[in-house]
Image (cartoon, rainbow, N blue to C red; front, side, top):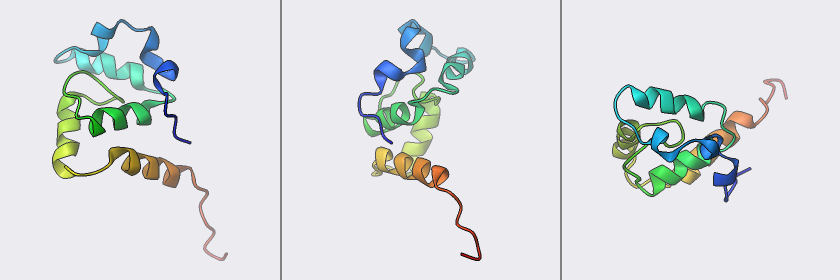
Length: 97
């Protein structure tokens, strides 16, 4: 299920915003905040679809997001990520079914 108003549920909502807009090795610390976040996918889709250039969003740095954008420049990242999440949560179909 996709959450439109995802920000109130974000794991980072209690963090200082500057903690997520850092450089270098500090980005790895910022990415830890995203682990286990219930709206990580929605956050990442927002950053990719809006080409947000700075900060850690959805557990990815700006460099990591740029690499994805280069691979699929015209993608609707919400559609891509939502489909991937749905495929991951679908039960496996037995071979003998």
